[in-house]
Image (cartoon, rainbow, N blue to C red; front, side, top):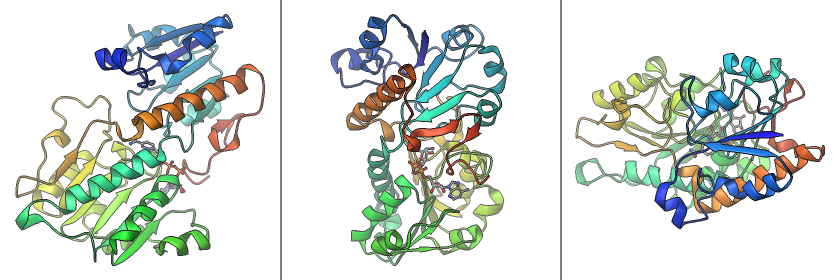
Length: 341
Ligand code: NAD
């Protein structure tokens, strides 16, 4: 069986640090295990254009492993060429780099390692929140007394709410089409706002924690930004394309928002001239962008590498997969997180 993995280059760091499992060098720690069973395991970071290893090997691979950090974008067109492909495994959380509707049509399963890096991301969100709010002197504030809302209150959004609790915010809000169980909402003291414009208009800071799908692509656009509180902050560790990049840069320059931070970009790696690399507020700050790494702490890498192996074992031994990991199963969406259907 041919297994293709598109991972990122770790270079010398990965050679010296075997716990950097998500790299081309360390191959999720599964090379020997797969090859000892007679499977062919191709690992590469080359993913763009017709001559890339991704496009060369996808045509006869049965299993594709990718990560959201250095995503191999599996389009409908590529899927049509991938005649043997049966299963795509995301080593991490967030499978929007796979055309999920096309996977449904082609009866290709899509699984991810749910929960594997949600703590890592929630901690990064807290760091970014504090970074934006507590700039220096004339643009520095306390988080205490502010209204903070999460757009998406799933595994990460809920953990962010939990971590915000000790900061004595004025109010914690959430916007999600799936309401939190009453006891969970009560335990973090979060109130649900059902209208998106109303939600953003009440928040001093919005943290975005929902998947990218047709209902969230470009959701934070010029029109919605007008409804934000003037001078609000935005933290987006979910997916870059949920925000319109030019509208964000313009809102930051005009003062409609005071800061924007996150680790996700609409295309990865981000082009050198991506405006989020250099955008600033009128005081020359307010930019907390970093490369996509929040979900790839060493703890997270151990969990998503193990989880990938478990999904592979289940597939190879024809055992059922853990339901929470299945995004697309037998020709249909199994997850409610990638849009309301
Ligand atoms: P999850 O499935 O547990 O929760 C997602 C929540 O978003 C669900 O409650 C869902 O109902 C909600 N949602 C979906 N569409 C929505 C919409 N239109 N409006 C409001 N809410 C909506 O997922 P999670 O584990 O919390 O992860 C969320 C996302 O975070 C992932 O899909 C991924 O894109 C991103 N992520 C980023 C990193 C990183 O390294 N930066 C790592 C992990 C996950």
